[in-house]
Image (cartoon, rainbow, N blue to C red; front, top):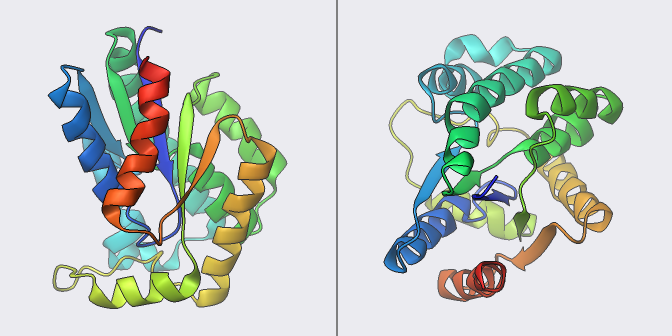
Length: 211
C-alpha cells in the first residue's frame, strides 16, 4: 500500500495524544495527507466499545478475556473501515495505540497467553503492521505526577488508569520487552523530556522515512 502507517505506544499519561496532534500539524504543513486515529475508537462501533471498556459502569465487571475480544472487535472494524482505505489512498495514518497495546496490557500485564493474542492479531490484521512504532517510555513516578495534573470530565474515569501501580509497572516492562524483540520497528523515546524535545526526536525518524 502506498501510504504510511505509524503507531504510538506507551503507558498512561506518556503524551501520545499530544505527539500525535503535533505530528499531524507538522505533516499537514508540508502538504501530506494524514489521518489520526485512536484505539479503541475512531469508528461508530469503536467509540461505543471504547465507552464500554473505559468509562461505563457496565465495563467494570468485564473479564480479561471479554476485554481482549472487545479490543479486537474495535480494531477489526477500524482496519477495514478506516486504516486500509487510507493507506490505499496514499495517506499517512497515525494511530494512538495498536496491537502492541493488546500484547502488553492484556497479554503481559493481564496474563493472557501471548500465543493466542498473536493468533488473534494475525486474524484481525491479516499482516497489517505499522512501519514504525514510537514507544513513549515513562517511569511510574512521572506517570503518577502527570495523572494528578490531568483534567478529566466529571464522572468519566478511565478504568485502565485506575488499575494499581503493579499493573502499570508490568505494562512498562512489557513495552520494553517488545522493543527488544522488534528493534527495527519500535523506537524508544524518552517521554520524560519536554514535549518539544519528544516531538523533535519523533520528527527525526519520520523525516528520514519520508526522505
